Image 1: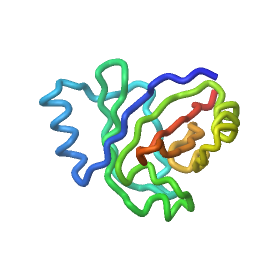
Image 2 (image 1 turned 30 degrees about the vertical axis):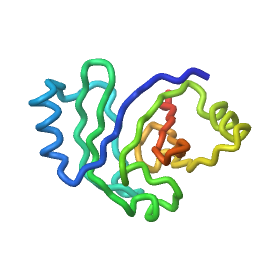
Image 3 (image 1 turned 180 degrees about the vertical axis):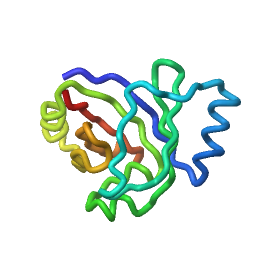
Image 4 (image 1 turned 30 degrees about the horizontal axis):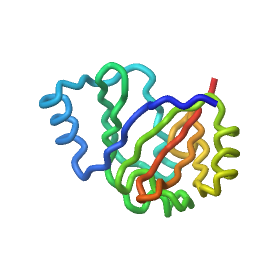
Length: 135
């Protein structure tokens, strides 16, 4: 199983202001390639802006402290943001986490169409996403 850094998600109360900051101050561009299709009726319906340095995406997501509760999952990826990795074999990675004793929330494709996603915490409580894009 291969992991590659895919995106960093920052949760915010003001998506428009954050989008302006990252585009204007840091010179990031609006991401247009490979964007996820949000499933806004399955637990998270917030606004999201997508920017990139040309290699790594940033997802600037509207903060929603109740998204995990509404979707029935322990880990909430939009309460404080998260870092995300893409894998080519999510099932093998889940087995790896289980062997390591790391609990995770399997969101399936409840947040993004065409992506199977899991979320878990690092030892300091930071949220980590690992997802696999459908072929």
